[in-house]
Length: 125
Figure 1 (cartoon, rainbow, N blue to C red):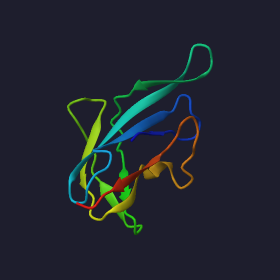
Figure 2: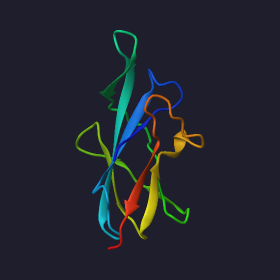
Figure 3: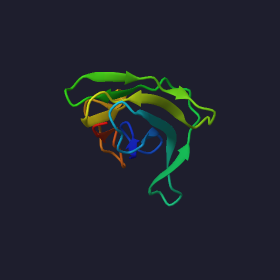
Figure 4: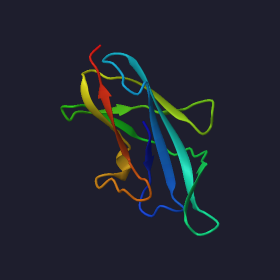
């Protein structure tokens, strides 16, 4: 699952892509959440947009919201790859969880491909 996250104006902004592995995790199983930051640039022809990996030491915040609405904070840390941040998380209950970067809320803009939250279906273990 991927989500492209953009604040406000799309071009010239910082964006992130979230991925979850496995894509359909089981309750209690270790799940890896990866965050990849990108700079968004206009194309040479003026159309939007090109994504280029960004090595940004920004204090990223990622949250997992369980089916009951309880918020769990994920600790993302930079990996050996300077363009990737990662967190290990264990979903506690089955159902539809939402992973989000709360700094783009509460509206969660849908500018150029923006999806600042992704849904993850967690299966019984």
